[in-house]
Length: 406
Image (cartoon, rainbow, N blue to C red; front, top):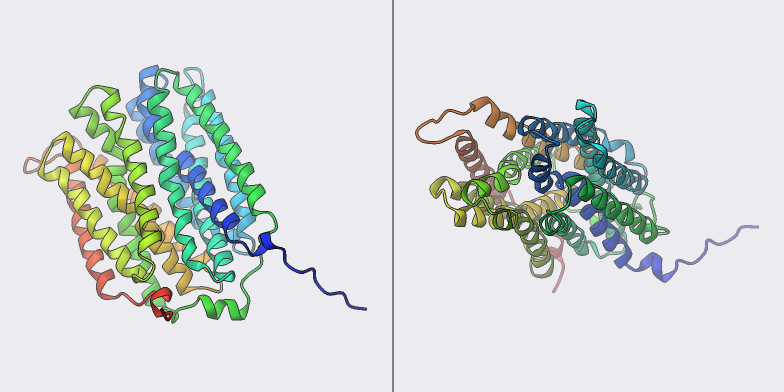
């Protein structure tokens, strides 16, 4: 005697737990696990627990770990929700462990923890994108997927604000506090995502979510453009606070650049999610990449605090729009199983962001035509961003929403 499967509950159809899960997950994984080191590094140097050279090594270790995580994220293609929960737990543990990095800690401990945090952050981004976008497509509300990417900017703004307001504390205490916040976020994602489904989309759902499948060479071009995006954004994302510190010594002034960066990221994604549903995603990505080029080029034209602040807004306000649009395009290109393509794009992004600081280091302290290493790298990034923006604009295809009848 066969039994009928239980009827789905309202919570299994409602999209908000999936959206909230993705938003919180990306706030924890990227805002804390990926980017908390940027505002905390000056405080650790103030406390005498970190040197400038060690800070650069820790940042490089995080970029390398992010690349490894991107290359291995396809392990969770069969159950991305499981990978998401595992990665969030890892972010919380490695963040709390950073509180133990002090004068007497082994030299490699900090770099190792930052590398692991990079691995977990990449896993979380790929798994959150793969699982949340698939679940929302199953509910026929795929356009809501844009909202999960507001979590990155929100997390950056939260971590930056905590570091700014709590800067009188030792950095080790701030690491512990951020680790506890990450742990609470991981528990919240686990609670919200229970019963929301983990299986691959069915045939009908794949057809409903799909646009015309991109050929392999089209997918390769997306991967290349995403890698250029990683190279273009990483220089301001890494050095904006340092650039601001050179122009204003008051930490209450230069410390605001990072919360400003995160706030711009969150608001821009929210605006796009609300008002740009019918804009082809590839053109949205192209526009974001073009505005980002303006943000990377502006400090080359004016070495002033206002230019650094404007760069924070322009780059912060576009890097998550480009991320969102790029990962949604991957979902459209491979609606049946987007995780491998998401992983390749994230790996290209990670490789690009490794190249940026490495190029700064290779160029060294000298000046060329009046430009230092940061200026030269920013100029290269600006040119590449403009070229890829032009290609993305010309090769754009309609978005699924624009094909739907009004």
